[in-house]
Image (cartoon, rainbow, N blue to C red; front, side, top):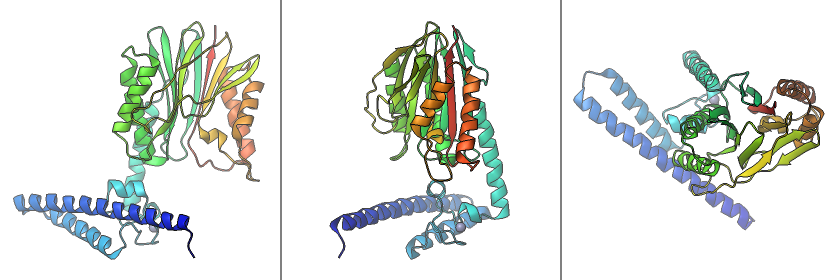
Length: 340
Ligand SMILES: [Zn+2]
């Protein structure tokens, strides 16, 4: 006998499947109408007929229950790709040679654009020095890292968009543009994050959100920050490591969310260390997770090192912990040091 929990799960899955089915049906019918009216106006264009045939074929797959399945392996096609193009017939592993080469060209270009969004590698501002390490799991990353000077202070931002690959990298560049345009407007940190959250909510769908630390630092060591659901921010000093937990929910989850601002003061040579779960969630060959405690102890051992040495030590330790196994998640590390 099925339990009521299993029944509820089946009902929920059926409801989701029906919603997806009607979404794709609507999308395909819309494309069909546009193609028909275009071909009435332009009967000489044979490409319109080819497109119409591909829409009709997708509608037939929807009717026969094979829509969204790869025609080679019969596994589901990647959801983010299908949402962008409901006419897809093959999963990423089974593209034709031409399609694969075109995709690789697009991704290489996207990766180059994304790299250009990063701050300078040897960044410094009055009284501060920053170094970061940005490493996508694939060609493009859903991690976000930026440093923006504003007046006598500067903003530091480090975040992680849910998911990975192309969809996450597009949201990452959206976050980048949002904060870059809001940064020049003399807003309080709280207002800045609340506005960014509203803008992010307006342009994402359910399940798309980002965890993020946004901070502002001054030459005298004063720092204020908001942590929107992100992993603890570490304040590293001679006295030890203090882990500052998240102060609010991730960006993009609730449109009206408010975010409280926390403050701290860094003495000369103190450091802030920020990272994404590409660090904490690596595993060793026996299945143990790297975890927060190891991050804290690493930071503690390197409290007197320059930022680049902390990053180098961190990467070396990750490599020896994981036994050199290729990482599955995007990784970003950011070390900020008050120099004087
Ligand atoms: Zn396939």
